Every structure is written in structure tokens, then in C-alpha cells.
Image 1 (cartoon, rainbow, N blue to C red):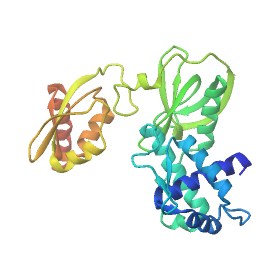
Image 2: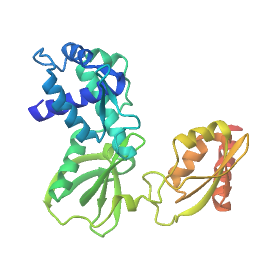
Image 3: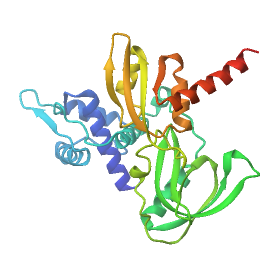
Image 4: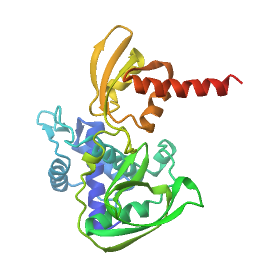
Length: 301
């Protein structure tokens, strides 16, 4: 780890220490630091260093670290949480967990991330190409079928994660866009310099549930009736940014959404079984009904 990476790891450690244990005394912070495996030289956490790091943590994470002068205990100010979007907060949480393992290798016994077969070097190459304004040359396998391998030269727009799977969002030579799952990319190289893509990745997926964009599927107003227990989950983890509560009873909550009812959204609805009912539009009800009928035929044998 270079000096810059080591300093960032220290700042992550200090943020995690105060966020998790605050109010906490400087003495306790110093003792925890001396026990940390991240402390390469067994050094003390000198108070001047702590104050410098405290300021850097406040600037980096946009938080306020307060000191109670009566007790000299440190804590995050009430309501002081990093002012990031959900996706950035998720990356921060992953970084904090990684840092926890770095500082205490035995934590690997208790932290179980979802397994992934993705090659992280491809992710780094893709982001480098975006930053450098370069094309990407890909060897890509469609649907894991070895008979459907193709070569592409694309203009990378962004990288996007959905359901713990990373995608490279890219502009094709014909001006259309495509989402390349990282685990289907067999080979990747940076190509020639190019102009930046004019596509806005947030705009591209504004009406999408996940990563799928189907040309023939347009955004629609969707109404879902959800059993109360499942509705509580939807309230804490909205399906889409457009989700709103229309009405409530003791047993159900009715939600409205405005998005494209693509395949991945339909699969999401079906994954909740009888706890979620599509009330509108009728076309989506018919699609769900058709799939359920097909499933019924399969399992009635």
C-alpha cells in the first residue's frame, strides 16, 4: 500500500472508530490504534496527528466530529451522516468493511460478502478508459454461449452495479447504448483516444428498474398492492425512485411507480409471490397472469 493509500486507510479507520464507538475518548482511540494491524510501526496516535486526521475526516466525509468538553469524548454530531447518494454510501460501507478486515484479519471469519466471478481488473481498466477518454476493445460472449462471441469497439460511458453485478455502459458505433456484464467479457483492451459520450447514465436508466432497457417497452404508471409486512420492506428499500404511497389499510399498502415494466421488473414482482399484486396497467397484469399460468402447468404435472 502506497503512502496515499495508507493515509486514506487511516482516515477510514478513524471514521469507523468514531462512527461505531462514539462517544469515545481519545485515550480509547489511541489504545485501539496501537492494537490495530493497520498500525505498521506500532506508533501512538499522537493528539496533533489525531486533530489533523479529524479535520481531514470531516472534509472527506462531510461530517462533524464533536468533542464534549466536559468528558473529552468524541462523537459524530447528531444527524451528521455523510452527504452522499445511496450508491456512494454503499461503496463507502464496502470500503469500511474492507478496512476492518485489514486492521483485524480475524474479521474474515465473520464477514461474508456475496461471491463474484468478476475480474476486478476489467472494472479498473474501464474506469481508466473513461477518465482518459479512450475507447474499449472487447471480446464479449452473449448469454454465456461460446458460439456467440463478438468483438466490439465501444465508447465507455460509465460502470453500473445492479444486484451485486457490474456492467460497463457503453455507446456502440451506431450511436445506441449497451450494458455489458463484466462476467461475460473475455478480453478487454484500451483503444484510441475518443470524444466523451454525450449520454447521461442517470438519464439512460431513469425509467428503468434495473439494468435492462428494451426499445419496445415504454414507461408506464404502475400500481401495486402489497401486503403490509412486505410493504414495510418496500418502504425502507424502494423499488424505484418514482415509488409513492397511494393508500394504506391495516393489511396492505398501495404503491404507484412510473417505469418501464421490463423483464427484470416482472421477475422482481414474481419473486414476492402472492404478497404483491399488480393492479395496473392491465397489460402488465396479463403478462404476470400468463407467466403464472405457464408455471402452474409445469408444476401440475
